[in-house]
Length: 197
Image 1 (cartoon, rainbow, N blue to C red):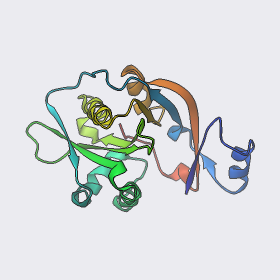
Image 2: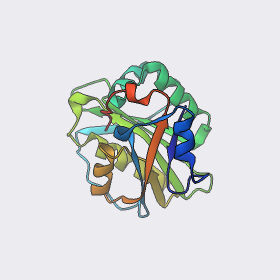
Image 3: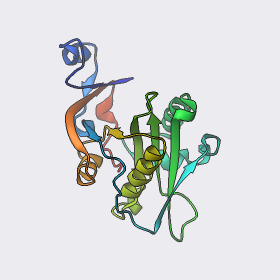
Image 4: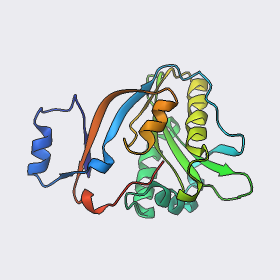
C-alpha cells in the first residue's frame, strides 16, 4: 500500500505519521496535481500513432508491456491488480493501447476514469515502451483521451503525473499545476527509477 499526500491531506501531521509507521518518501515518484479546464481544444499528435480503446477482457496479453513501460519495478502481476481496480468502475473506466506504423503490437497504454458528475475525467496511468519514447506517443494518448472525455460531456481533466517524467509534457500541452503530491510507501526506495512516460 502507498499513500499520495498533498496540501489538503489530513490530519496535518500525516507525513510524520506515515514515516513513524515505517513508510518512506520516494522523491523520484513525487507527483504534481494538474488540471486542464478546456479539454475541447485540439492537441497536435503525430499521424503515425494510432490510439485505440481496448475492451478490458482483451487487456491481459498486454500486461507485460504495460508493466515494462511503466517502470518503478512494476511487474505484470502489479499491472493486473491496477487493471482490476479500474475494471471495478465498469463503464466509468477505459483503457487504450497505442500503436505505431509498421508494428502490430502496442507500444503504449493509458487508462481513464470518469467522475460520476459527468464533468471531470481523471487521466490515470499511461506509459510508452523505452524504445518508442520521444515520438509523440504520450501526447497522442493524452489527445485521444481528451477527445473521448469531451464526447462524454466532460469539461475538465485532472492528472497526477510524476514530476520528473510526464508532468513537464502535460504542462507543455496546456495543463496547469495546482499542487504537489508526495508518495509514501513500504519499500519504495527499492522500486528503482520510473521510466514511464
